[in-house]
Image (cartoon, rainbow, N blue to C red; front, side, top):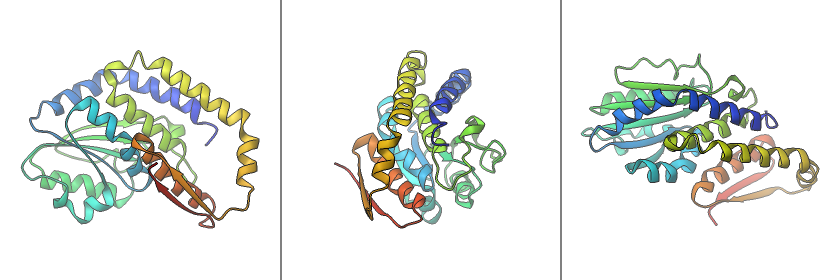
Length: 243
């Protein structure tokens, strides 16, 4: 699943491009809804995607952007959801079967007067992809390879992150093709040429690791700290912070 990510990214790009017109129509209707709040949500790794996308959404949509974990949204909905204004809920979820994933979108429908749901998920058969709402909804399902089987999200994380980046910059989708190809080339170099170096680092007897990242890299630093803890069964304790 780790090594399959570069091939997956090109498929994500192609699928976004194929659905460009439908996504554009959905976003235009949402953005026309007055003082729109845009909320990026998810649980765990899926919430960290929102941390990485906050800046690009802020720059390109020029709306009030908030990044809220669904686990916070479910326990304290009125701290985040406005009962007076429209909201675009961008939900990230690998399977979409977590109870908080459905509870978050259900609460938004109950609290807010007008809701738009943009669901980005890896499982077409998941509960979130099939959420029945009276609100406007668009579901973007990643290619099947993104639906990781391992505990630790890899392709699902990077695939949904790329999908979010491309949706935020949908008007530039054609010109972004070269950037996506460059991203794929660099990833293949890292995976194919530097794997022995990564293995030698992993074989060192360390018990703690700190991942640093600022701005859009903070979300990935947060995700990385969780990944190493998960993949070592908690034997390596990790932290994350900005530079």
